[in-house]
Image 1 (spheres, rainbow, N blue to C red):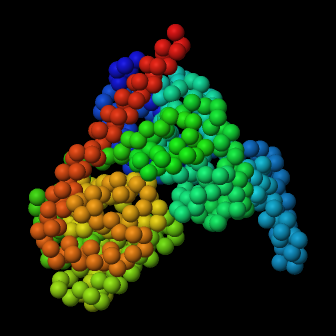
Image 2 (tube, one colour; image 1 turned 90 degrees about the vertical axis):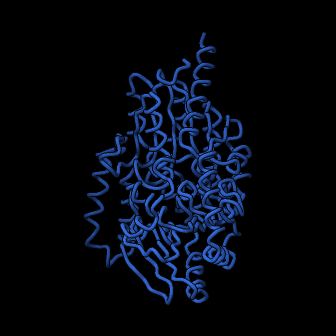
Image 3 (cartoon, rainbow, N blue to C red; image 1 turned 180 degrees about the horizontal axis):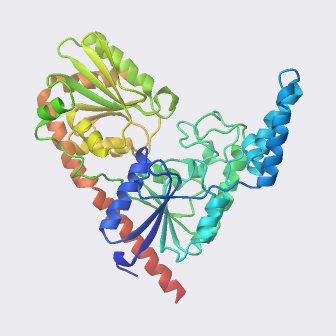
Length: 454
């Protein structure tokens, strides 16, 4: 089987729309369909009726047990305020109503019990040639089923974070316990949070699971690939395939002033765009550093009015700070609208404590916008420091502020950097290059599987 038109693929992800992982999931799917691949998409949680995705059936463990627990829970309500034991017992019944998975979650054990997911895979007919998995955390996927799935199809997994090899967290940041078996976790609240420290158990269970199936792992950055090769996934085949973006959608605007007027933005302001999805609650982003940059510039810059566009706020709002204004713009799934925001910007700012290969940076580069970002994770592989943008140390708001001022005052440098950013995106971050690499690997694996079966 060496023709892509003969390949059928099943794509799996936590959600159908949302952040960077969802955009990669959907963009790759659309591009593959354009290449003649038959793609079916299924997600744990469907947020849009127009995304073209199905949803895994969500099945509980035992309706009778669940009903009994909730009945007792209700009867104890009248005693809760007067009796501490009754309050405690009601809390335990809420957990028990979920059966064994609920008890495991209470103990800090990652929940892999999803009978709806298992039923879906058992009922597949015909089975696809390729099952391409993306984010598997988020409460919908049973990792223990990987060996069975891999017996019937070629299984590829694109890692968007580190969760597959840690005891619970999506990003280890400065913790290296995942190398030695986790345990004594320094931050149980880090997403995805767990209640008690069962990280050593979770890590060991994952290691045992990965000993059985044959998996083909894809990482968007060399940084993540190097960590995978030192992790419990070390025995699995791993390749680096950079994520890409639609370069026809994300492209520079030849009429920037007209676009700004259309978006109700000033033609004369220096516009800094940054994405703030999750705000301070997102421990992997660094909203505090961005906030300090805003404060620094509000006190230091009087040469030109500065406009910060904060994409990802809860509601639209405007704040004025002297010669500086902050526009909070709600998160949008409208890709053209987001592309227009990038086209309006002079600089894109990205502060993070952890990141693998953020799509928003690729989108900025593709739009010819210089990027100032934290040098963590795979970000240094996206930005050519001093050419397409600037890299700064994590939490260094002074360096980030100075880079913003430099590009604000040096128009020629900003223009040259923007042109270099677009040229580099054309060279390295085209979605078609990403899909071609996937399809080539699909074909190779399927051909090798056929030879082994003969």
